[in-house]
Length: 109
Image (cartoon, rainbow, N blue to C red):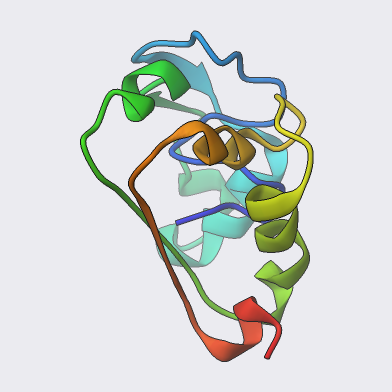
């Protein structure tokens, strides 16, 4: 999926195109968003392992999903906005075989 600020995996805003699989500190927003699944913020891990952007782009096929109106703007930026580290999912524009699976709200329809 795509995060509310355009992250893919745990490649948060500012992740480099050449990033590889690594341990990362989770952004505060990611922790807050995950809290319900962990029974509260205090139970959410502060770090995670993520494939880097370069590692993801080496895949033969990439599938990304998004649902809900809260993802509409970031999906638009990822698909047709400027490519760069401010919206890590925008790097997927450089891949030849990406499938976006969106509900009507995330697609803006």
